[in-house]
Image (cartoon, rainbow, N blue to C red; front, top):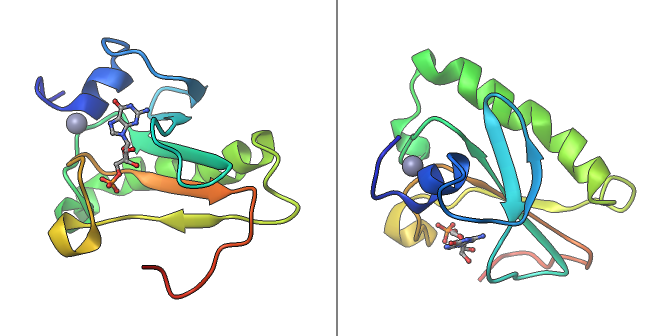
Length: 115
Ligand code: 5GP
Ligand code: ZN
């Protein structure tokens, strides 16, 4: 828990969010500024700043994060047509919240390459 981290505070229930999934290790909630008809963020409860900070000791948290995505996508009704997952890392990646998170974007066709 990092006191000044907005996603740590959401994970702890100290800042409200529209949760779609929660377990011991992972929380998923609707993005406050959706970029698609469905836009959900999946985070580890443990504070990890970004993908560059992931070490082999974090493998259980990363495994928990990734293996909950199928469940969440199914629950959001995205499993049949598919969806985009995005992890932004630092400035050039467009990261604005420095707590590791996976964007799940769906409900429309996603173009490539991204902007
Ligand atoms: P990033 O730009 O770091 O990859 O993604 C951060 C995302 O968090 C953005 O899409 C932004 O809209 C979302 N976000 C920022 N603050 C909040 C918040 O307080 N609540 C929720 N639900 N989403 C947030
Ligand atoms: Zn955090």
